[in-house]
Image: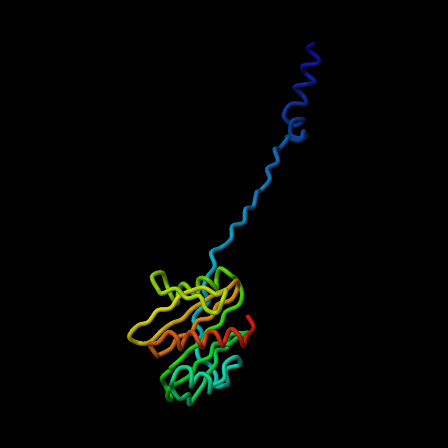
Length: 172
């Protein structure tokens, strides 16, 4: 028995170092959470041009003011259109968004927050409108699209009519 102990002792620590140590395998579990949608920044008038979905003479008639100048944002595929009352004052802005349905709804809720008057025109579109001392905002969404009309006029019927025409012309 003694010779066996000697052999085992001789194997001692060096033999143990060559023996693989069992390891436990852990799998990393990745969970994905849907990030909260963010509203893109408000469009800005960047360049002169004609609004691709609203005729200038229609806007002048519908909003009740002459339109000497139109500017467009650089948003694609649908730029925001800015209709001016004079060289510096914007009388009407039309913002169009098509993309994520959650973002479309957020854009409308930001423009016409809870407590605003309900809006449901054209058919199938929902949102709200808010009138104040500086004018009116009419904002509606449907699915992944939103249209927000801001006018310096106080009558919501004007902004609603412009929103309906923009939606019809855009075929959204």
